[in-house]
Length: 492
Image (cartoon, rainbow, N blue to C red):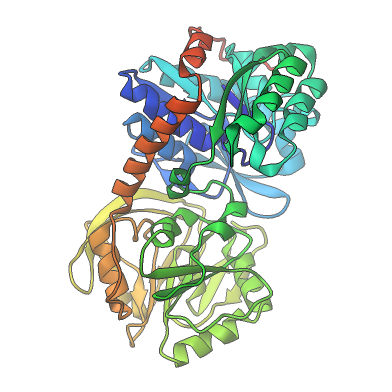
């Protein structure tokens, strides 16, 4: 099990890279994250959803994503509450404090998923969540040391030297952990080293000496990880290419942004400048304003208006600019958005941005499905997925964005410059991406298939890990999986 000294220290991408390295050695590998918190999710072949990072890890293992890889997913809908997804299906909303009591009831689901996953694997790589040192949340924990205890998994701790203070964070974790938990940690890895690695030889020695844990590797920073989807919304503002020339796409940054991996293919594309616009700044003159998904569409729409971006957006359209809304962004573009069941909290109806003649009603049913079809305008093949709670209809739906095998989806205005769709993944495939950007008048740009780019990055990242981490030592630490009592409780 790989735990971290904090969030965003590189646990997810390390597990993905190690998984690919072990697969290349001929092992059957499966990823597992007991509990995740992210609004960047992926649809699985078995009709559920998991964290997007676990879908990447499944790709690294060469297998299809399964709900068993991430049995508990929390999708933040406010500063204090989240939608709870268990074994791929939504189970309502929970407040942060309430969840501390709820999570102890989820251990049977978590262990059951872990055991099913282990049946078809030579090795399971388990990823922790947040920080291993959150002793204030240790009681009933299912994400870090609580799961390590329940499963008997040895732990490797990852620290991020790029943040500074990595010696203190690793040694400090040993200090604050109860002795039984500290003893579960068998080694450590220092991630994201920049510059001369030999300058930290003494640091590695000090950490090993103070903790008694084995130094398993000092991993230099690699550009390859930039091609992987970000798991945390805090990383989204880095997903842009500032300056330069080419097609200028602006994405207003809203607090509840979801499925932001839709932007990943654009950020690395030559001839495209992707700008994440933080609050407090007006929408600049650009070619396309892209409104991505949202986990709390009404809240984000209200914040969009508070920023004055609704006025800027209408000016953008008057200048001849294009607008593209995906999922929650599509819902915002309509004339009205209603939540009669209180799906997002309060029962209410709000006025939309009015750029598409459609109306949306949020419903209690969540649509999770992979889809295929063609772009309505020119029959370019389309592959993607839907993940939403809402029904949208209205006159502009007569001009759908895509024609899928089972239904039409999305809408366009009469000018053909405002588009909306529930389809995620529209920029991942080269031909479709090229067709969409050509609509904007772009001619001088290169399109590389995003899936191929990620595959190449996974292979290069795996080789990087093999060079700098003692993979043989990691394999020696692994223990046989035992059958666990599904009704087991987690001790404090």
